[in-house]
Length: 212
View 1 (spheres, rainbow, N blue to C red):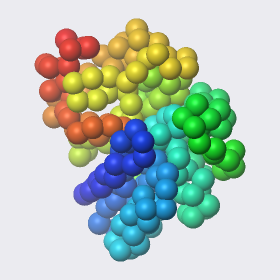
View 2: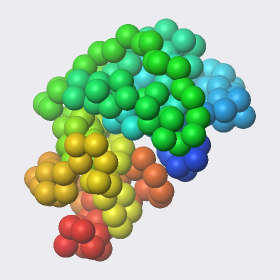
View 3: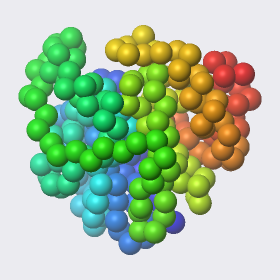
């Protein structure tokens, strides 16, 4: 049985997630911690719960989702799982930081690329990978069918969708991806987004003004 702990970090109120099970194995998803206080809160939770971080996962590589990525890689010494099409977004991290008025060193990590149709194994539980570009070129959603939940990053929010005015954004592509890949799933499927509150597929089908 999975549990998920959310942390709201950095200037963008980004959701960083720790997904873990009864075996105390865990995935760290979108580490957005940007200062010592945020890093300590994340680190303390992992340590106090005696969690074993087995994967560092990115839904996409926009700056607010990767501010703690170098720390995570240096601390847990495991490759970062992401879609290859967002490598170019990650490579622009220093330029993105400059636009927000702060300096970020170039990220030096090992990566494992995933693609549409791949599955990740978490102690025998499968997570399906959906490539849903439009917010960023390599945005992916991680879906566990057994427990009916997904980590959607900035693809789908409660009552909204990801911005499409950023680099390689595409509104039509994002809407099509949500409708054809996510809205075909069970209505009870929980959606844990990159910002804001959790929601469900059924709720968004009925009430999301972008997707009615």
